[in-house]
Image (cartoon, rainbow, N blue to C red):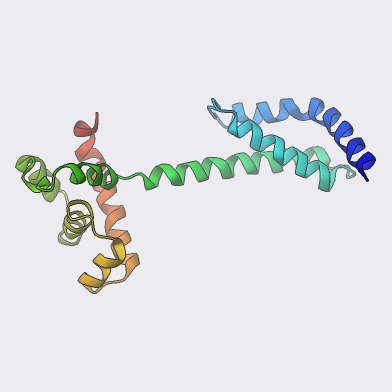
Length: 169
């Protein structure tokens, strides 16, 4: 058994030499900045899995290209979702921990924020950002679904991005 694994690994190193440029090509083609090598590593994993499943097929090259490309795109999407979750509310929650009277922090700022939002969105800002309540708790208090509160939050984020840009730079 170890001999078979060793043979497979030795053969894979030859495949890697042949297809490594494909990984780099896809990283470049997708305009990925891979400073930590995370995308390259994902490409290697995809190549290995493709090798294990499809190496004996005539279409191995095409399947491998699609597999690596798909994995890189999935990783891009995963990273994008993580970035989207980092909201302005998280920034303000950190500030709220330091100063309980955040509403008095800058009245003109809060007027600017209030003016950009609907009533429900303002409730979201007050309860989630200022008071630090959870989404479920807000939904219970406002007699709406959790998805409705999440929707308010998404709209708050979308509307406040341009408004808060001068404050975050």
